[in-house]
Length: 281
Image (cartoon, rainbow, N blue to C red; front, top):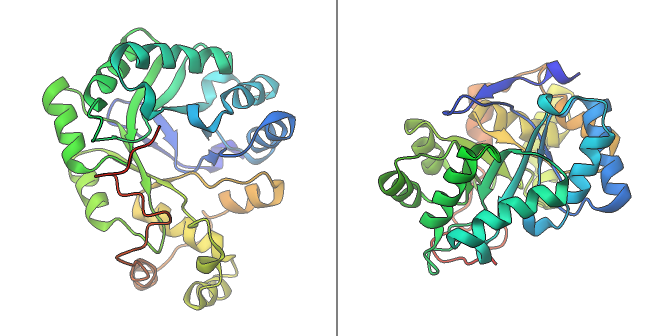
């Protein structure tokens, strides 16, 4: 099953699957069991976490319980806004590893730019140095606008391998995705199903699902895949975990892709978290 999920190569050479498991709110023994099941029984190899999810320990426990060798997995965590000053950022990466009982993270991302605080460049330098120390294999960002990424590269000489952004049919991020593609930064989608029943009840998507004999969720995840985005849907359900990775036996037409992208809204963000002003701590 693991080999059934295609992989892509980031700009620093690390390969990652195009679908991973989001773990927000998966905690404790139940969370570890759900993540282990996703790895061992459903073929997931990319596991997304964050310091602020308070479940790095749960992810690490799932990795230890799993029968899959560590080197075959891609484990992600993220630096919170309150620890973006250089020394704090270095210690937070170390603390993330201690929490998970891991020797390294495959991906470590700055969770938000927090431009009002304006520490994201020194946080980025900390990640660069943590990578040199062998604590991280690939470094990236979340919710960064193009101008934030341009500043990182200008001031440090290092470009992120990935930018994880809010992306779903109601907020298709067309301009941001185009910029990523032109600048060799991979797009990763958070909240790919929009965290809401509205998108699952959409009549257009339901009609497509019927035509393809798929679920609405599968139609949406296939849309992400064909956009070229890495997607990390969250589920503790073994049935849903399997459903979410079963999207490689059909294709959407260009017309269907355009129709789904056409569902986007100017105010499509779920919680109105505009990276130009939003501050995450």
